[in-house]
Length: 600
Image (cartoon, rainbow, N blue to C red; front, side):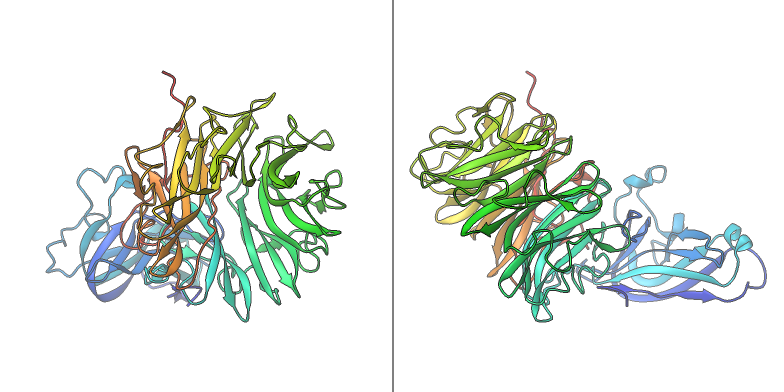
């Protein structure tokens, strides 16, 4: 057995068999439920292979028990032939009527296999056949190995999810990218310490990358690792940052996946990390042009909390104009908290944070330009971007297609907590349809907190937050359509997009270049905290393969929270996802297509 739920059943042929023609290997099965034929793509990424027309064996209730994805034949010269598994029901079966691979597909789909739907192919008693072509056998050098890919119990059972529920888990972060790539990192207690774990969604199961869900990414942590941050580079490979705590001193560490292994970038591990020897927490991360990770964090210097920053330049973690020394970016006059970071198309970083002015919390921002950290329209002096009489905190940051910052925060000026956003139009900070007046975008009689903002390249913005409804948290969403902040099928009223009787909290949001909106949040499920995800299907908020019911994406025995979402440059189209057995535990996000402001 290799990894979680992975079984390897190798066939080795030492010498060329007598005779000529194709080679067939047959394995009888005796399972209880229907067999499904489903088209399944696995990208050649992170050591994963590409398979088509997988067989899914189910139990009597239709739940996936064994997934037989495919196989490959590899000869002594390294030549490879991909093999599509055939499944042959017993001769007495009414489904034994021939057809491709002995499994019937829907009429009319044979010319377009990408549109084939999962279909019952019969009961599990029958024969799996792996056929190596006559042409490959004629040219093959021996010995010859045939290597099927098999997984047990769906690798993501309802009661275990991504983390398999073997230990207390929390602080999940989620990255979504092109090519059906979904990456989840979280904190999990193992071997006497908290570690950072990671898995990726292959399209049919959750898989680890280089021991990321067994040894963990922070396997050297003596005390605990916490606060993971996650981003994807241009190839869709994950980069992970976290705070590693030893003897109550926290330092920011970073690792990135590079197709075959987890790499430490410069001095990011071990030792002092990228944050040097100061206690460092609340790390925020993005990936700038050239696949350069950039990280901001909060740390204390001479009794004052400051915001610091470094970027990976390909050789070392470099500061920019004193960003990682002295009083850092924030300046040190008063304490600063809750950094948020984004990268412009030019690669220049933008950092927002919450600071104090006259004892009142305000939202500040600086961008790096022409060798210096500069403010935009007074964004880092006096009242900063917020400039309100009441306390402002929890800034969220995003850049639009023109690299103009959009910032949302919680403001208590109206007398209760409301969500206020502003955007930089190139000359000044502006509100949008009264977004920082009165009740702002939330305009609620109760508490509105934990904002999350994302902006598409077309300028369409989406804003999510946690709303208190009848004493419990719900997740609300509004979209900026160019003239107003609109709700989408009840997304900002009643139960919002979560609409549960339990506590929904801490949303995360992302928008891809096609204008698709994803929202993830933490949900209390049967006494535990889980991660849920939904999408907008054009008419209503929908889930993806059980992503917003049951245990959602995490489905862990312990606590899960603090979800986050990010998209790579190519975005991610959830319409390529397929629901059904084996897809019960995916994520909690919602997708909105066509997020462009109306033209008429």
